[in-house]
Structures are given as structure tokens and as C-alpha cells.
Image (cartoon, rainbow, N blue to C red; front, side, top):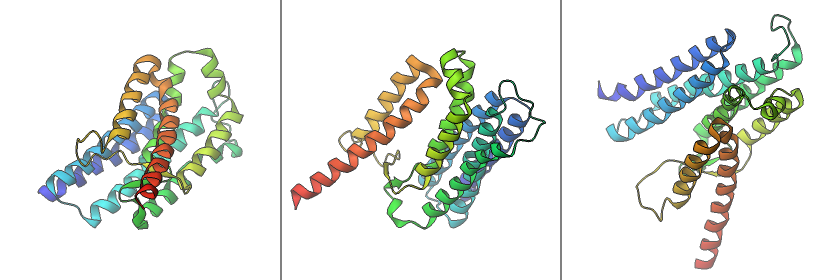
Length: 239
């Protein structure tokens, strides 16, 4: 029973991703976006449960990746696909070039497959993690709900969406070392970059609400680059 608890949480993660896709195709992109964040919570929770219960398994690892493909690959692609049709286009008219949104799903699957066989990613990530990529996509419908005309004009620009797809896909598979958000302990000096990121994220969310999410992700990448450089300098100085 105990060893199946993390897998049950992962199944809830997968179920949430599936319902988000349904919401998107019924025009409720806000609910679809909330489904991404809910799936991210379950994704965090299943890993924490596995560590606390000490029940890691190959089945759980593979199931988690399959759930991630749906919740953090297919669902964000569906959200971006529907954004192309806002605000004035009829989604019943098939537009082939909007299918480019599903490159996010393809590159997310590549990212997850690489993660499963890459031994370098035990303490840090290489390439943008799929939950971060998905939350970036999911932030757009929620930013639109805030009603800021300038943000709306940018997000609904097809050029912006195509550019976002290209950059997002590149970040998913780029050989870019990024900070892992997993806390092995609560020691401040060992987790200073994580604490800085959490503090920055909390302040931005209070001030800018959902519009803060892209800013937080850019800061996450910048902070990761600073951490990697500082770590290399510390190693060089010791040698």
C-alpha cells in the first residue's frame, strides 16, 4: 500500500492534465491554466511522498514522465494553440500553421526522455524543466484575465506566439545548466539561490500577480547562470 501512494498522486497529476485539455477545447483556457498549476502541485507532491516514504521505483519514474508529457507538454500546447484563435477567429476553421504549437509537446517529450537517461541531472537540471515551461504557457490566459490592454496585444500577437514556441522549445533541450528547486535540507548557505528565487517570486506575485510568472522564469534562468559561474569559480580557486 505504502509504495503505491506516490504513484496514486502521479495518476492524479495525469488526470488533472487530461481534464485541462478538455477545458481548453471547451474554451475555458483559464481552467486549463489552473489545471497546469494543479498538476505541478501533484508533481511536486509525488516526488516528496516518494522521498519521505523511501519508495522510489522504476515504475514511478516512468509513470511520472508519462504524466509530465500530458500535463506539461500536450496541455500547454493546446493552450497556445487556442490562443492563436483569440479573439476574432473561428476555431472551427482549421489553420494548419497553428499546429506549430504542438512542437512544445514534442520538445517536452524529448526533454523528459533525455532527463531519464542523463546521469548529469541528479543535482541540477540541464535545459528548462517541463513544469516551468508549462507554467510559462499557462500564465498567458491568466494574464489576459487581468485585462491589461498592452499585455493582451502582445500575447495575442501571432508573431509573439511563434517566437515563444521557438524559444521555449530551444530552452527545453538546450545544454543549459539550471538550478534544481529540490531542497535536500533547510541550510541557508547551501540553498541561498533557492531562497533568493522563492523570495523574488513571492514579491513579484504579490505585485504583478500572474504577469509575474514570465519575469520569475527569466530570473530563474539568470540566477542559475550566476550560480553555475560562481560554483566554477569556487572550484577553480580551490584548485
